[in-house]
Image (tube, helix red, strand yellow):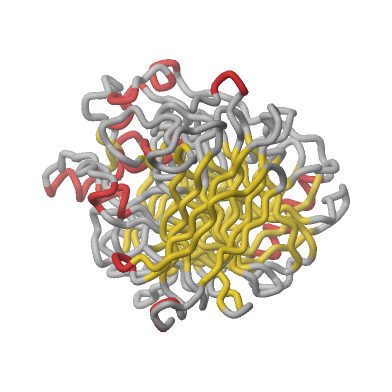
Length: 528
């Protein structure tokens, strides 16, 4: 599941240097050309199109990208830039401009782009003169005139050079908050993610970009999604800002029953961190875009689940009803924990999903895959509705995406700020058996208000094994508390163990709930 190249390629193209033609050449180039006649367009019409498609057999997209584009290496492809004067709505004194990505390398399915003006849509024409082919070796004059585009990126009036959102590859898209740093991504839909059968990747085959009013700070984009199992109509209202907000409406029309459907799927990367050293062979102490999954359950409980880089696929499911929100977050935002002055992991945005209406019963599901390289995404989280989609249905989902340093909703109690693990036992005493230590730091909430000597207790539950050496004590460096315990396996099984922990004072919860999944090593590797 190597998807990270979608994000990296888009980010590289967004910052690539583009040689500017002289003013006369720019004037000759003119605006983006259009194809055919304007056609009436609305979201209702788009839903009708998706419903009609779902009643027909799926047709795979015809691959017609020339070999010279598909054979480009990484550096060649990212050297292809876009001429600023060809941006959609350039020189129109609007707060948005849109620029397009070229087909090539792993992006071989042309995506139709349309502009919508006053309820009338017209397709935008590809022209090789829109692009600067840089050091790619590609000669635009030899490419088909109807080649098409791979995706698009959005610029806001605050900075015409750095984009705030990009839609590129299958149904993937990503955005930035006030820190202007890309990181994790999301997509329109996930099907059979983490299942034993191959995953299906729905694709946005067409986009409609609604021309914003001159003073509008909202950009509306529509997308038509298609795959062997489902067709769908999407609407995105994009609000740039310190916290980038996207309002998403999705109408899904299944072609066949779908066993594992992923609504609002989030995709991220975790190679190693304080809690997982399996692949910690790099000079940087931590490498990850997200360090945990946060959930605000329908019953009001807040949960924090640190993510890991497992040796094999892990699948976790957390049942809920009408969840209030969930997201993959980057809580650790201290540079010295990463020491990466090139990609700045501490600046990576968190992404929070806020359902707008009751989603009913289902589960937040988490897929963790092994990775030995930070260029491969290996973490996926999504909502899986309990009621399975069936052919002939229309299923509507509405939610809001928040991209930024901190999610808009925060637990009122103390939060987990660090998770560490390592060999268990008592320092200075010879170990007689294998155990594993868990150290969880909590800060915030009412913890700073506790009197000196207050008896805070860790409430610990495990699915298997024996809990030992438990403690919870003040930690002045974070103005919070540190909970510690050892887990001793009582058998040789390597089946995952589920752990649960929260802090309690006078019988009252003082923190969110920490969840973890630990896989004991094989018996032969349980060194003392």
